[in-house]
Image (cartoon, rainbow, N blue to C red; front, side, top):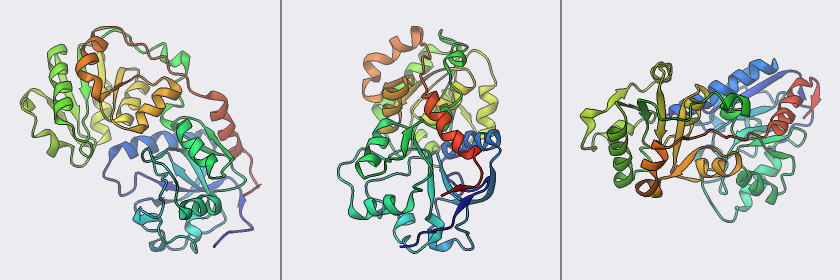
Length: 327
């Protein structure tokens, strides 16, 4: 098992950038916020590595800097299952990993022996790791990783109580929405779109995932929706408008809208939004409950009463201000 014994932190890091070679623009949103945090801390990113490439295909990576994995739900109870992480134990590319707001890919039970060994050997022992929810923290601690704290996702780190007070509570005239190609539920997804068309003057839909539009083409009122191109710049342009709400299934599109001070309701389709809703009071609604709850939720005030764990966030940030740190 490879393990560097002489690694030092000197203000430089290597970043596992989840947006590289990704087909999901949510990864680009995550890394936008992570990059801003690196700039805030004065951290120099020495190199960026894709998480969507096998470690053995990446050459020339030094073990002299910690390797930060940004924000995504890359953690798993079966790390040998993804093709990216199944042959890494002799590879310095995944040595001295530091987690930055990562989460579990899905709800799961027991972890494999390989997974326990992976986290034990490859996660930094000296840096404190950051995960996005208490579920992920408990999973890691159960495997013996004690140096881990729940900071919520880096995309939420600006959503202080003072900031959230500036977010409107009353329904806007326009709305932007999203659907999710890899988690189809036509009955509830189409119901959501129907309700939005009935309540708002204009309904935009942003194509975040590579196959979202292919799924959307099956919707019976497609011609009534205003399609927003599949790039972050186009989404940002829409978010620059006033009197606009966000209602949709894409988690980070919703958090991005909150950062733009838009009234937001995220439709929870899996563990990610659900756990963040539990931990920091992210404004969510379960997709299975849309028919019973959506209309009332939208016509009534929605307060963004988000409670991010500021002390944990500052604790994680502080360690990167300390140069010459043994890893």
